[in-house]
Length: 372
Ligand code: UDP
Image 1 (cartoon, helix red, strand yellow):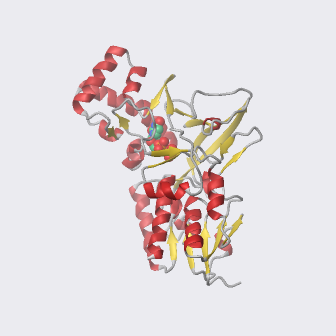
Image 2 (cartoon, protein in one colour):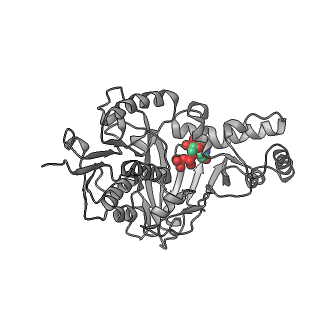
Image 3 (cartoon, rainbow, N blue to C red):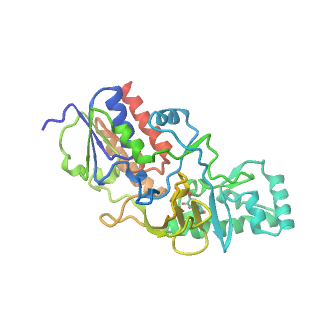
């Protein structure tokens, strides 16, 4: 079969679906989308279980963005509820809010001490500022030094060690900076203008993106089946090292293992996501019915365990942002730049810790480049 007029999209997650949608819809060209998973939507895949609860198979996905372009684009395919994500952390048995904020101070310390710390913080920082923990540790005042060490130890050290296999200093500072210390009383995890969960779930959104007469989808199919064939363009959202047959070595990733449990009660915990920052081997517990306010006498939770990615054993979830890994990625990138009509995108293609909105934005931008 001839593919010279066909665009091949490898991976049917958000990155692949957006680029496929635009090529098919705006350019009217033929697109073949393949994915080695047996379903579309990549790691955003969700489905309703027998109790009517929408399960996020690969962990909680909460959409949030400040980007108007991304929001406008997505709104063509779905409406969102007005869910605003909050995370509860269990610190030595105390339930409190994460990111650490002024309310957390009062949850974990006696009132007079919390008030003193609050005042000292306000003397040093502007209200509503966000300070990465590794910055926050640079305090002169003894009380604030104590506080910084407390937050580091109780919120970041153990969780990060579970999640990344090393202390916060051992991964790029941008990783822990995603969850800064927040000098505010806002308990939300994100402050973005737009946030929510697609009303019919993420899989439906991707399904609609791919619902185009110019698009063919094949799941359960590996790129190796098409390697060497001549396509009009290739959009590759798999891992860039795999594309080049690991010629410079493997890019490391973290994987995640979810242990699902079902309970004969309405709710298991007080919130959709509870982080266990000091205890246990799992990082957090997700309780899915909160996201779309699903009604059922049962509830489904997943305990999340982080582990190294090993080919054939588990899936890639997180690139590991570290200098040596970035150097290896740069080698693959230089190879990629020599290729014509092959585009790399997505968390795995770009080896970047994108949130959903950033992955979508990147796909929109790749398309803009092509359209020029
Ligand atoms: N983090 C932490 N404790 C927490 C929450 C986050 O140490 O309670 C750190 C940890 O290193 C984590 C990073 O901040 O990997 C980013 O957290 P985020 O919730 O953004 O991670 P994701 O939801 O993408 O897994």
